Amino acid sequence: MQTDDPDAMLAQLLDSDLSELLSISYVVLANNQVTNRHIERVHDMPVQCWSALLATVSFPGLRARDLLHLFPRPQNTVSRALALLEARGLIEQRPCPQDARAKRLYPTQGGSDLLATIRQTARLRQDEIFGVLDAGERATFLALCRKIAAGPRLVTSQVMPDQARRTGMPLDAGVSDARSPRDSGDSGFSSGK
Image (cartoon, rainbow, N blue to C red):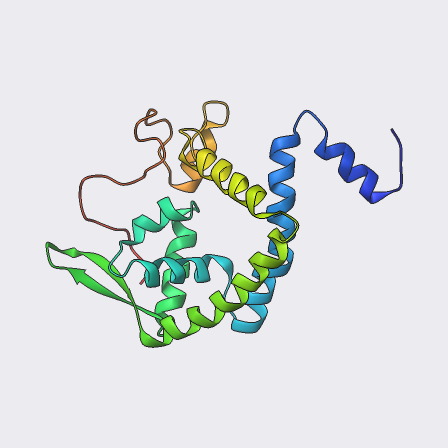
């Protein structure tokens, strides 16, 4: 169907044979246009940095490699984000007591304070986006997102195996550990320093 109406084109795409992938992509990309760009403009904090700061404040002492599990991104992107956060004095790396070569990440007071400001605005944005859903719909949406996130094929793929390599995630580690890049060791990866 030929149309010049952008809303009609969007509806057609969201009803296509790729409806699930296109729907989630549309929501994420539209949110990025507002939320992530706002945080980047106001706080000079790209999404990979403020998400790494969120994880560091939430889990003081986490390893850099843990960020790959929490926010699946290429390893070099995470390394650059950590280098920027450290250069701005928002996080610090400390040697792991069990392995001096491994580093643990900790927020500074400035990092915690900045994240508190970002969180306050992000919570308001979250309510703005999801305000179209009633409480039951929000609960269902979150349950479905958690189910997808816990599934064995979100960050690995049999049909697109080359992409797992780009994200630093295992290519096809099997169902039991396909989501986790972690190993039994305590080593992280370089933060680009």
